[in-house]
Image (tube, rainbow, N blue to C red; front, side, top):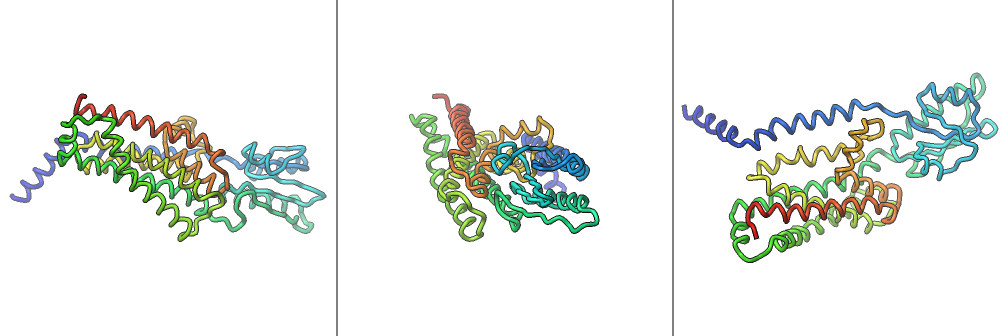
Length: 340
């Protein structure tokens, strides 16, 4: 009987917590739906620039699912500008391939298909020799070399979001925030103080994560380390302001944690771990409202491709806009607890 009474109390407690009930049933459906669309998207054929190829070669490329595009002249810059997976130059029967290698898996598949076409073209004669060059990385580049920068950004975002959200929630639950709001202090001063307080630890955490990833785990690092730190600090500010904002809508640590599958997990899918090309347009447009999308793109550009801050300025601007918007929403959200 005592066990039944305890079960009844737990069930009633959950049923009365409507927010928890909503998150409990809605969050898994959201994540499952996103995974359904991501893993059922159409895979795009790699685009390949072909210089010196005849019509039969172009047709053979199409048969092995390569989108071959004829060029009169092309170089490495053409691959980057036209967003191609690679370039094939044919000179006196010799194949010379340049791969962008932004995605090592795609590059390996493309090279394998080109080799298949070259063998078909050679027929009974000796196999055609293929000289291969890479714009980013080399033949030994692993998938983790590309994934690493995304993970650095994700873990900075996740832990700063969680710590800041639960930190402010504790202030509310313990009554510290209420007593603070009883003083003449203004809402923006409270937000500034919390941002600075949590921000100092976010800066330290970000620097530790970046240096550990590069120096200890030996993640690929072609660009400047301080550029990586700048991007991650901006991302940490976004996570900090977002965590504080969402904590105002949670009444317990349990509810705060339940925001993770709603706010954090969907961003993983849009960070570039799964290629967005070939996805539905609405799904690609959805990535534009995900802060981690911009941070991951900037980190990959700096750490893997060696680009600078000027090259990722649009991503930095997007992160700054997110941070400013969340700061103003935080100031507005404090109205729930006191009107100045």
